[in-house]
Structures are given as structure tokens and as C-alpha cells.
Image (tube, rainbow, N blue to C red; front, side):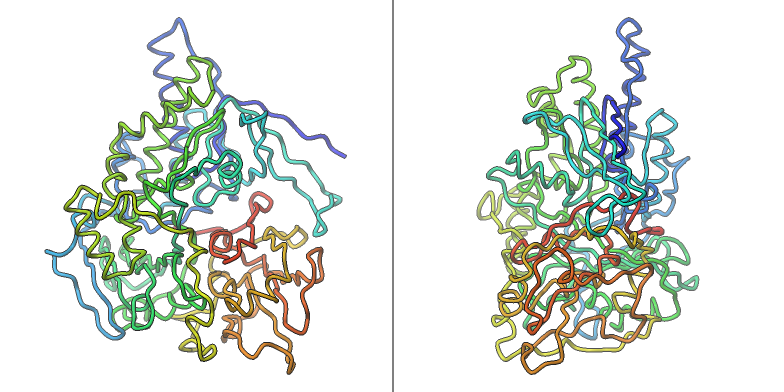
Length: 600
């Protein structure tokens, strides 16, 4: 069997998003400046390596995105001349939707933090790809299509990352093309994996990084890119909505939609749903499709064409959900550490800023050749002295307030604004998202009624499998399933009756399918599966895997069983967050697999 290759670098950055790339660019620039100003004590031959699990930088990046350039100004001040960031915000609107009407909110009631003057409508994937080229010009090495599978540890000290093995078969055993992943050893490892990163999650648990802080809480963002005739929706217009379909009679879920004019012929559309919702039947993808039929939104898409689709988790917990972000040999930045301002619907600028602050802390550690927790704690000191801290601390209780519902949350927010972010209590606490999922009988006491149905027309509305096709998602047909569901009996004996198997609803990619045999002994209820809608049965390179036939303990076939269509997975991590029992674990598949997003 081939031996595992060992690489040694000075700084390893896991994740080629805008935060990780900001860290690499800032560090390279500061080292160059130091060597120029201190020729007698240079930092020579410094090796900075970025690991990106996507097939190319930007392929796994998804965001709204209205970019506040504040963070970028500090890293790449010449961006206006070299970057793809061109479309300034020229018009804004926030509206409340009823089932049939759009009610624009008066300017007087719109909070100042929701104004976007001076910001830009961008594809964050394109911004990341441009930043990668800037990093490479500075000598930073970027390995694309390489996934970090496991942290290397020496006691409590992080010493690097083991990359995922290639050529492993469905049974988990080495195949004929097996190649062990390299060990990459580093003085400092920066975790910039984005929300719910697999390495960050393990380290947070092992090192108790969350401590007595609030748990990290999330939303799911379901996004589409549309090509529309010129003149349909103004370039640079920013529209946000709340109300229908998430806040309606009998339902209270936090979130809303966005429509952004990228240019004259491209519109970004999405629905954001807080994952602290209670109804186990709520289906974010379904609601995103239904919303496009609203009279205020349908004309935008009616003559257009869907170009791209994707979904991702969004860390909404805010300041009180930020874990300890430093330790022996490691730092955590950006979305991986919940550096996101949910009130402003923005996180890219904070990812860039925390990446830059991490670079400054690393430079100090390199001078001292001290990579201990005490030394790298300089990162937290720098954060506490920065505008990023001021921004997040001012909104430290914002998202917790809206866990109480839209009306009460609005009143609590006004009180917070009057008290510098404190409100009635400080800090406000929250539960983890999966703990808020209500029992089936609490929301459907008279039996499960089908959701309001419509037949997707594959022009304006789509089923999940068709949406996945537009994400460009691909996974190797012979690889092991990267979604681990260890207790299948739990799915049948408890989840079916307590929660109605909500995985088939919260997943935006039809990965989880509950297969019930046509039998009198089958459960007397089930939710309509989106896979039953009209439209193609198979997505792009989709493989359907019956878990009960593999290594997982089989469930009772009379009750039905879980079928994992893991080839559909768009890597949003929602299942890892929202499963009510914590019975699903997302692990990284081979590098290069997953979505191939276009302009998202």
C-alpha cells in the first residue's frame, strides 16, 4: 500500500473562501513589508498553503451577496480597478408580504443597519476566485480539490491536517486506485471552513471551545441565479421581504427573501429560513418555490431562465455564539466561528476582517516562534480592539430576540437599539436549533395534511432533483456515503412517529428519502415527498443508496426505511444541524466533489 506523503509548511489555511484568502493575502503582504523594513531579520521562504475542497476556488462559495467593502478596503485597497466588483447598490426596498400583496415598509421604520448605500451586489464566488489570483501572485500556494479530513494533533496542540484518502470504495476499503491523503504539518493551522466545518466542529467539541457561550445557531439559505430579459429588474436594486410564506397564520419561522439585480440580465433570488423553526414539516426548498408564485415576485422570473441553484447554512448566532477562536497551533475565522452579522444580512466583510486579524496575530507568533494558545490569543485581543467587535457587540442579542417571534422580536429589538444592544437581559440565551423542533402532534394533531400542492412547471418552479441539477453537483459513484446515520432503528421507531422524519423536508437537495412500502402495516401518515413531483427522477450524476443494504443496521422494512441519495448533496450541512436527535453527521467526501456553483 502506498505511503502517506508528508508536507511541511509554515501556515496552513483550510478553506479557500474570502476569509481564508484574506488571511493568506494579508500575511504575504505583511511578511514582504517586514522583510523590506527589517533586512537584518527577515522571515525567509515562508510557506503559506490554502486547502480548498471544491474543484476550484469559488465553486463551493454561495452568498447573497450585498458586499460591504470595509474589510476589502483594508486588504486590497486597489480592488476597484482589478476585481469583478462593479455593480453598486442603486435602489433599495423592504416589503412585508401577505399571501397576495406586497406592502413596502416606510423609510422611517427601516433600521439604519439595513441600508446598503455604498455597497455592491456581487457573486461572492467570483470575488473568491479573483482573490485567489491575488494570493497566487504573492506566492501563496492553493491546492484545489483537496479536502481536510482530520486534524493532526500532538496532545492538545494542532499540528496540521490529514487530507482525505482517494480511491476508497463503497465498502470503505481501499480500491484499485487508492491513494492515501497527505499529512500537511504546519506551525499554525487556520480553520476557515465556513459554517459547520467538519474539522472545526470536532475541535470545538474536543477542546470545549464553546464553553458556556450560546450554541452556534444557523439559518439555511436557498438561492437561485436567474437570467432575465433586460429591463425586468433594475441592476443594483436590492429587495428584501418578510412575512409570507414564513410568518403566516398558524406558522412562525424566522427569515425572509431577497432579490438582487446583479446586472441588467441576471437576478439573484433566495429564501433564508432560521433553523430554529418548530414545525417538522417545514420545507425551505418548497417554500422558496412557492414564493416565486407570489404576484409581487412572479413577473421577475416569468420570462427568465434558471441558471444556477445552491444552498448553504448561515451562522446567525452572533457575538454570544462565537467560540474560543484560538488555541495551541490553531485559529478559527469567518463563518466557521460565527463571525456574521445576521441583522445586516452580511458576513463576507467580517470574514475578510477576521482573516486579516488572524494574519497579524500569526506574524507576531512567527517573530517569536511561539505558537501556543497564549501567543495566538493575540488574535482575540486584536478582534476586541477592532470595528468588527464593535459591530457584532452592538447586535449581540439581536437574533435571540427574534427567537421569540416576529412581533415580540421587533419590540425587543427596539429596546436593544435604545440600550446599546442590551435589551431586557444581557446576554439573551438560546437553544441549539435541533432542540426547537416540535413534535409532530404539536403541529399536526389531526394527522398530517399534505402541504399546499402545486405541480412544478420546470420553468418557474422546480422539484428538488431538478434544482440539484442546476447546482452542477457531482459525487463519485463508487465512494462511501459521506452522510453518517448510525442508528436506523431510531429513524423508524421514534423519528417516524415523533417528528415525521423531518430530514426529507429540511434537506434542500432530496438527499433523504423515506421509503414506505405499499402495505397495510405501513404508518398511517407521511408527508408528501418532493421527489413525487413532476420532473426528472435523476439529477446530474445522482446515485441512490439504500442504507439498509449497507453497513448500517437495517430498519424494519414494514415501517419503511431511509434511502440516502448522497449524490445530490450540495454540502449545505443542514442535516448535521437540524436533525432532532443529532443522528446525522456530515463528513467530507473526496476533494473536488460536491456542487460547482456558477455566479453564486
